[in-house]
Length: 209
Image (cartoon, rainbow, N blue to C red; front, side, top):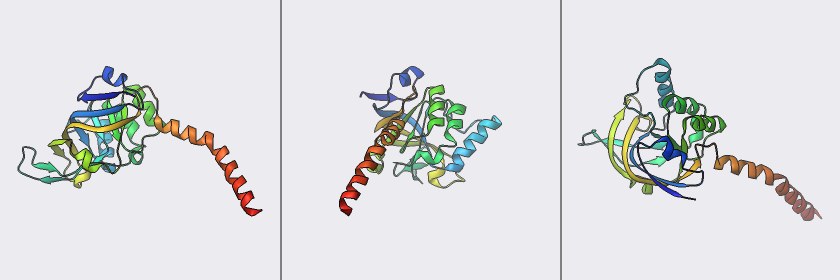
């Protein structure tokens, strides 16, 4: 297991050197949202050939919830917190997003499915798993709100760019070579299941004697 401190934007070579199970800290500008409608709008823009209000190509797009209140700052907003949400909620949309925008880093918690893994392998992208409930730790990394777009959505659904320093630690759950800790855990559980069921049946039989 290696630790990587990445400054965004990152190159394909930077991502290629990272392996599932490694630890990553991010510095630079990240884009966050937890809105399903936001994901769909981004796909619609790509299909229609419309540019997004920010350039996320080759960047970091993360399933991090962030509430941003209005303030006297250059962006007009101040971020109060940042916390990961479950990425599997967006699994049907992520392969299209990853391919359309050539994303280098995606993340949240809970991982992504095999279709997303395939898209990540095609584009050279990794998935970062952030600590669930790690709001206080993660929020310390926020330096400023760079921009807020699509304000017709509630705060957490907007397309928000945050500038962060040493955001992490995040575990590489899926690397750009198709290796997935989630697949490994699932396969291991399937392999162990017959033995576990046999042990339970023996315990039950002993209890009935």
